[in-house]
Amino acid sequence: MNFGARLKQIRTDRNLTQPQFAELIGIEQSYLSKLENDKSQPSAEMFGNIIRALGMAPEAFLAGLDQHTQASLRHIPEVSQFREGVTTRRVHHARRYIFGAAAAAAIGFAMMLAANDGIFFPNNQYKYVSKGIIAAGEGENIFDQYRQIQGNRMGAKLITVEEMLRLTAEFESTRMRRLTVESWRDRGSVYFEDVPGGRRMFELVDKRYVHSEANKILQYLGALLAFCAPLLLVVEWRLRAAARGITRTSDNYNQETP
Image 1 (cartoon, rainbow, N blue to C red):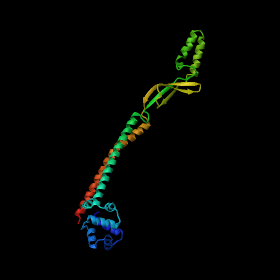
Image 2 (cartoon, rainbow, N blue to C red):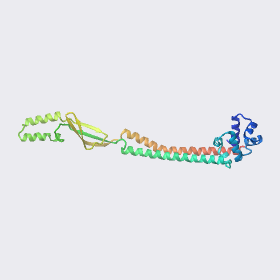
Image 3 (cartoon, rainbow, N blue to C red):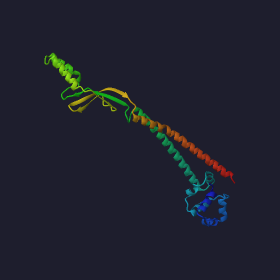
Image 4 (cartoon, rainbow, N blue to C red):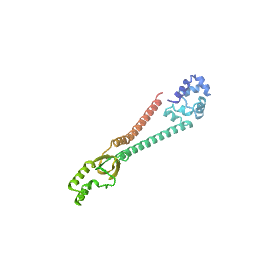
């Protein structure tokens, strides 16, 4: 919108005639007519008088003007300041968008690396096996040495062969209760748990890489964030370029239209 159209718009919005509007501003009606028909441009002093008479902030008036009109009024300090402010805001907005997109991309790549390395959610699954319950006073290797212990007792003629076989069979049937546990937590090569009747010793027998569902989701979200952020930056830049092109086309049309 050019200056005259903006001035006329404000007058009609306030239901004022040209004579009334001219009197409000403190100018002659003929001069107001020239301003509204863009046959004259206001001086810096006249622009200030118009703004004060209307009780408007310069920014509110200038926001409705097109770029070409603003450029033609750059001799007015308020217009120059307004244009500089618009440019500064655009630069700040672009910087914030660029920094935001860069940060989003960095966070996305960090999420992908964290998912791959299992930083937040483990990717390694550990398999532990306990051979049975170790009673109080027994050694940790009781299940491996029990048969040998009874064999030594038989060799020392403390028990008979039949007693050795009976004790060994009872031990294996009542005490050797194999238990397998799979865990995402690394509890070392050996760990113990207290249970009724004694304690269990769990030994690590297998460790395998399993990409957990949580890390799959984290990796997917990270990839989405990493690759969409630059894409959105390009889209935003293209939209701004298109908007500038539309504005230039509109300004050229306004210049060519009598």
